[in-house]
Amino acid sequence: MRFSLLATWLLYGLLPVSAQDTSLGTVEEAFENANIPNTLHITFKPSVLLEVTFPQPSSPSVTIHAGEQLPRNATVGPPQFAVRGALPPSQRFVIATVDPDAPTPQDPTEAEIRHFLAGNFVRGATTGPGQRLVNETVPLSGWLQPTPPAGSPAHRYVFLLFEQPGDFDSQTFVTTNTSVSNFNISAFAQEVGLGNPIAGSFMLVAPDPSS
Ligand SMILES: *[C@@H]1O[C@H](CO)[C@@H](O)[C@H](O)[C@H]1NC(C)=O
Ligand SMILES: *[C@@H]1O[C@H](CO)[C@@H](O)[C@H](O)[C@H]1NC(C)=O
Ligand SMILES: *[C@@H]1O[C@H](CO)[C@@H](O)[C@H](O)[C@H]1NC(C)=O
Ligand SMILES: *[C@@H]1O[C@H](CO)[C@@H](O)[C@H](O)[C@H]1NC(C)=O
Image (cartoon, rainbow, N blue to C red):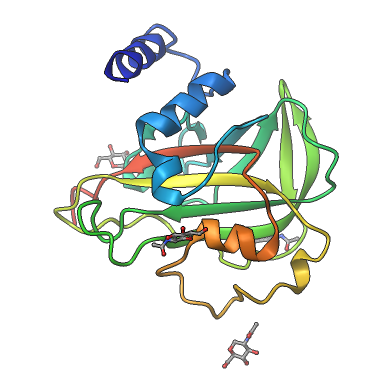
């Protein structure tokens, strides 16, 4: 484990201009090394790559690779999404972002915090090797910028892509009024029949130095 994480870092070090993930195995391994499948009670065997991109006010957008740490002020969002690889035939997709480390990774009593949840993502324009995913409805939970409290280590913010079941729009387990705290993406996926995620990524964000 430790060796493979080191190898992953070395590999990134040798690929300075390629922020995006290019290998499903690398993403799966990054999830394992960060203990995300266990923490979230999910089975993570991605079949496509999920690209998560944060627009920046005065510099090029940032597309994360799985496990990358971003400064909090680069995560204003809302993020944009694209996939690389062959999507399953579903017409619509659900994207969720959760923080399992709130308020701290040592004592995550508020976890998971739901930072984003939206259905009705459809195939959009192709962008080089990728294909955009565009939402056709307002998110159930609009993007909530990471705000780990002062003194906390960095939190994991996990993005997951699911195929959308036909009756998703009539689910009532989460509405725009549902608290974002103490969410459980695994339980939600079971309740509404999302199945296992087909893609994912994650970033680390530490408290703002000024907080
Ligand atoms: C984020 O903060 C750092 C350090 O204060 C600063 O150098 C950088 O320009 C800021 N970035 C944005 C997008 O505000
Ligand atoms: C898509 O989501 C964004 C926020 O993430 C929202 O502002 C926009 O209205 C949504 N698009 C549609 C068509 O509802
Ligand atoms: C959310 O709460 C408001 C105010 O109580 C209510 O009017 C609205 O119908 C609720 N929306 C949903 C989706 O439950
Ligand atoms: C979340 O839901 C899963 C079932 O999918 C369950 O095993 C797990 O204990 C739940 N986690 C919490 C913190 O309740």
